[in-house]
Length: 350
Ligand code: MRU
Image (cartoon, rainbow, N blue to C red; front, side, top):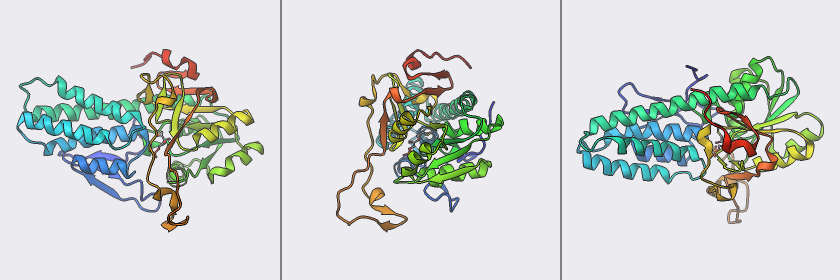
């Protein structure tokens, strides 16, 4: 069983609280939050204390199981509160499909509990379901990281965007897992981390993770990647995903599409690393992926300072869709494939 390099969420021994590392405070402070009810979990997700597609699913599952200790002991009322809790969590962030996978698993677990099941039996079943979800994510990350590492160049530079590391998953990470395992194979590339405006997941989180892991990393402003490519400093790009449609279109952090266009122009491969829980075969193309529009204040402010005229209109789509034809390979725990082959990948490991 693989182990994560570090864990940014854990359930207390009595199962009644979930502690998470507050990602908004990184890299300068390591502050842990304690979540005990559904509303606290929902706010942590909405406000980006925890973020990254697989991590959102893991924390929603564990947080819901923990919160169920506060639901009524009467089984009918327990089920009503559970239904309301699942609806609240589903209303937090729309793009990462991993959240909805986790919520569906919890819902199915409850449905599978016999009509005579008491509250404590349902709590136990939910807790097991949440732990299974996290274990599956950990194992998926480990497997896809090993598969993806083979694709990386043995030297030069690799660009990544946003944060798709351990902080964004229940395991070693997706894109960053690939990079870490690539370095373990003896590959000597340096990582260029896009700062990733407006919330700076790259500058704050990716740089923090890679520095801790001893991987050489240089942070660049998002508008520098093209110039570095033109100078021959970048040989590959690896990013994560929030949702991948059946045709291989990829929704990921805003700016990924620009990276993809730059890669295509410069003849650089773009790899997308994601667990199978990120693949949404129900959607025919990326046009069907809901894109979250976040609060204007994230764009208007930087480092606590207002950067625009106070009333000026701004746009803040949190994600964009990269068309399948700009993606070189998709790396999942089921295997490495072209976007066109995605829908045909079968589970091939256990
Ligand atoms: O808004 P965020 O920080 O949740 O966005 C995260 C991303 O876009 C990541 O690249 C994606 O979730 C992959 S995480 C393994």
